[in-house]
Image (cartoon, rainbow, N blue to C red; front, side, top):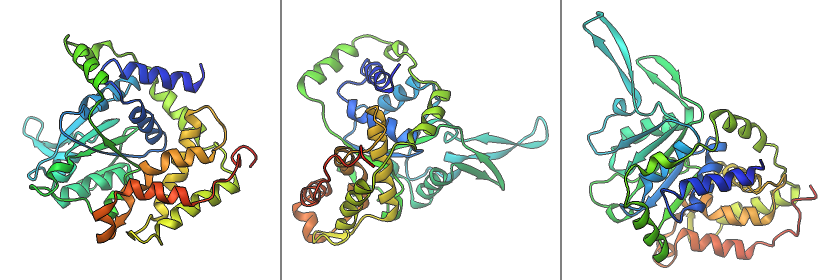
Length: 316
């Protein structure tokens, strides 16, 4: 079966539980295939936990959830060695980070020390506990959430260096009228998660990871992508532009967009479609810019000013 058909099946399965989030599911799939992590910014009660749970079930992966509060310690995330009096020796108790899909709920409520321990795990893909290094399970993805309304109420904002380590950021809004009606209908019954079928296996994911990097990017698309990124470093409303890590993330995300569309090459449309999700959270706006615009609005302005190469992706 073609990859696009399986992706559609993935969206269909997850829509049995979560309605109106096809774009989010596609972005999660792209992130997973590139070992990336996602930052979800949304109001409480918009289905973030259910989305992460259903995504893990559809790929046959293990799921864990960490509810962050100021008193959560790094060891609560990674795990500890504890003394077992029955056997008179220390034993390892792995933390919730030892899963395939980890929901880091309200990450900005954790102290900077705990945030750093989680983000180190995300970067290194391993846990070191009392000198013992343990590799994480494959695949591995962190879905972190933060509530924009409570940004000044007992929270610790993620610094720019940590924001830059998230592959993609998604702003989740309220559902449209018909989607919310459908949510009501779905949740009248119980055991809704039991209806989900597994679409991909862990082995499938490993095979797709090997194939996705072969998606071709022409010189013209490279120039287009670089022009977009470098424009963020000289735009009037931006104080801090996108880093080289962001450049690589945009390249990979565009490859993922093409790959999930069953194409072997990247087009300008792929770059334009994915850019707001990859670049927006990597920029710091100037004081004047932040008063009148959002990062997403500025990305759209930049995309409008950069000449688009014509059908460059297929020719390479």
